[in-house]
Length: 463
Image (cartoon, rainbow, N blue to C red; front, top):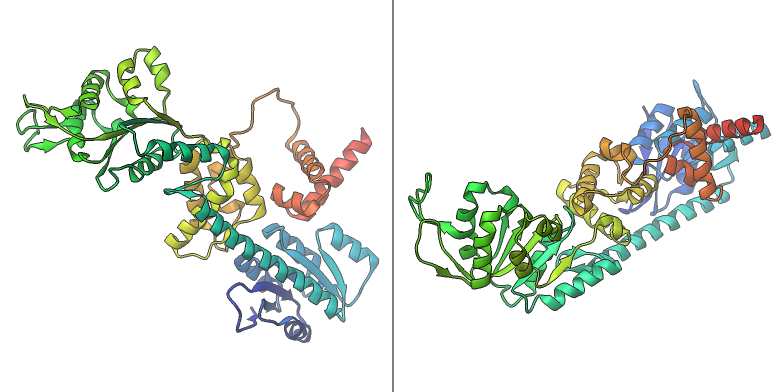
């Protein structure tokens, strides 16, 4: 296979591919379009060109209409199946109105006669360069915005998160106990760390105790410590997390999982700032600030008698509620950018973002697992992608197949073909007829979109 590249390129050059079996045409294109902002790649064979498309995802592909063994229209369809966002321009020395109409209907962005109008082609390339510059400016602005919207390691600019930041800032200098409420994955530990860092005991220890992970028979030992020989397996004296957090902050995560008998002893420790090790008759004074967190509604647990009311009110002097990601979608672009940079560095891969169709799916998703799920999806995508942009096939299978935002309702018994045609028409109507954007969102080639729309029109005409 024969593939050539232009050299001496800047890091952010726009990739342009030409597929033609005529070496003179390829040489002309490389000479005419070569500039510092453009990487011109040429391929003399269709398979070599398609491999470049899969690997590099160029912004524009120029394809000769008459290639040996295959038509340029078929190559164009294969390119658009790989990535519908690519601009495909067909070139031909044998112009006909019929072939031009067919090419445009099947997804070509332009149709040019040979010898090529190079000035017109340069204008198209100039537009791609300007688009790349806009993306780079947007990336820099995103980076600046992330820095501006970062609060003690937490990223957000939505009104709900700005209120959380404000409350943490007001509470941190004064609190003795704080309760953080929020679903799993909303960042309760990050909020607890922010409270600690902004408090007068920031130089002291920050100790995390996951109450849900401690066996019930070891909860007291973990919290308050024990003396050697106080129970089977206690081979040494051991300090509990309260003593470890002396002079700092203790974060009691998932406190709703703590057994009722232990809650009474915890109340005494929080209230009196003193602990008694298992097996000891003496008490030890501690100076600890308490941040408790739960993904369960402790008020309901109090009513159900599964959580002590006096402990709840002791912990809930101040309550900070963390919103679900579904309620703060304004923060999604910043979070996506943050996690992409994080995982690109971790995996040492030049990942820049998502394709538009993948990004559309991310914004429509309900995110039941909140920030933790988002982080996992971005990490998986960065690991799987072979290009600079994460596409639909790079996302986890379970993620792309499920739609938590879909609500159950009456089922209309129609075929899958009918559903596909109806959905394609609805997406196109929503986008005011923008077929390129509709194909990206649907995850199909423009040729497939045109076929679905044509079948839908025929069906409607027959009704």
